[in-house]
Image (cartoon, rainbow, N blue to C red; front, top):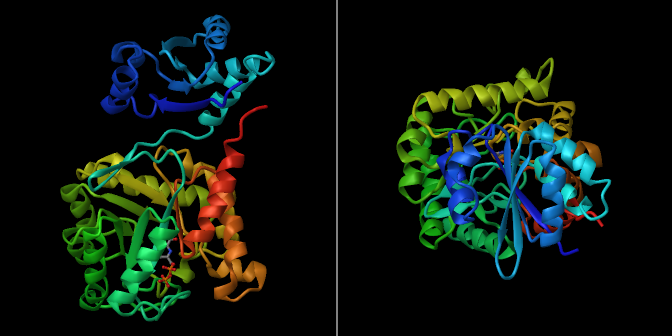
Length: 394
Ligand code: HH2
């Protein structure tokens, strides 16, 4: 059987979402929006299924309350289906026992483990987020924990960023303040002086630029200079940052942190770190939405290393699915961080293997964006771990 792939639209989470309905109903010329809307559950499209198998799936699915529509063209047949998650799971279990339907069931099951997130608008571009994206780190700082002092003049930072793009970075995260544990706050004027020329040049060159800051004024000026994403390591705790997101409509990473970099480690105490981080992030999302930010602008980040001990970081990575199942894209930043040094006994410039292990796990657990220093190596990790995660049943 040919390789088939499945894409899900979770109508339960996005029931009011006209864009998803229109996508399935119109672009794919499948069932009408009204038909799809009548299903409280999941709608999916399986691409490239042989017609005979589609027909067999239809006959098996009918008894489970799963509806199927065939979309046939000369070259291929695609299958649109809709049903509740429970019905689909049962159907998949049954199909796995049919030799001809096993691959179809496997594709649906895989997709159900990866809930659909809304495509992200980054400037003029729509990023589907149906695979893992790499965000290259451009630290224009004298004191970042891994690469501080390397890019203090703008030209060096721009050259480095161009290299990251050549290595496979899709987004460039430009920062002008170190947030390593214990770092002192940098005045806004200095942060602006460090980042603005770099943001400006990279945006003009057509790259997707994110501004890594916790200061609304820095975010505002960077967006004016062409940044299409705000990486708010303050997690939208500042009302001004929420207002900026609401008016500019740019994408925003909401990252979990307690206190600020100078004192955050004294707040690294949780009863259930995964639940508390998820709770904080969802509260911030609701607050932002209540003030006019669109849900689909917001990405979540557990803030690895920010007010976290080694065990907290490990638990968040192990249970990352609890965040990637919330219906928002998830960003993960583990690159070269201290907990990797603790586990490997390696200095900061020799943590690529340890970093690679965490990236592979983040991909497997459904993270959409990985924030990394070494993009070339991370691209290799992503290629392999995505291939394993998406392997066909055979
Ligand atoms: N980590 C750092 C900085 N920004 N942003 C997000 N969204 N997630 C992260 O995990 C994250 C982040 C810290 O890493 P780095 O920029 O390399 O170091 P420094 O803060 O010392 O500049």
